[in-house]
Image (tube, rainbow, N blue to C red; front, side):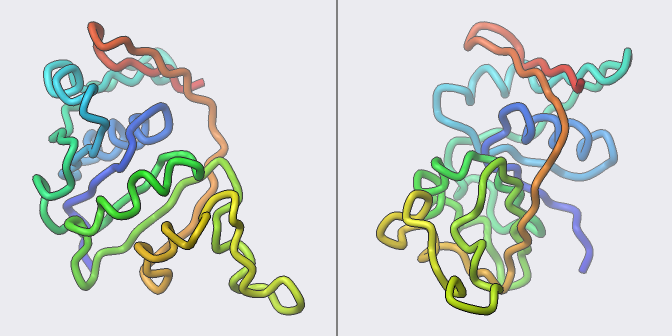
Amino acid sequence: MTVSNICIVGPGAIGGMMAAKMINAGFNVSALVQPARVDTMTANGITLHDDGEFLHAAPRVAAAASEFGQQDLVVVTVKETALKDVAADISPLLGQDTQVVQITNGIPWWFFDAFDGPLQGIRLDSVDRDGLVSEHFDLTRHIGGVINCGVHFGMTLAEPLTMDWL
């Protein structure tokens, strides 16, 4: 599978760093953001300060996934507790072969699916109350991940999005 179109869902510190790196590597990256961030991010893009080097990137930005169409790869970088807010909204990004990578800073709702024994199949209600998240994520196309890097994120709605990769 060739990956050229990537959508970052929730480009905060981690997602913004990934978007900047991917754009500078030549990928076509879109960013699905909260409505209040669309204008600022469209106007200013993302600037990543990485070990004395500044990487600037300008992803295509929208608050609705329907503006992007199907992607080759969707990278979900929202916190586990915010998944319920985006799960139903990302379906326009998903084609038959779209892979979904979830980069998380917490234990995902599906953590126990592959375990043998008494915990197998247990869903974490604190993350997926009432099954609203798992209803919208097909785990056969889902790749889980944990990231361990320091990124300082700074932005107000009147300023560009800037990050320092620590």
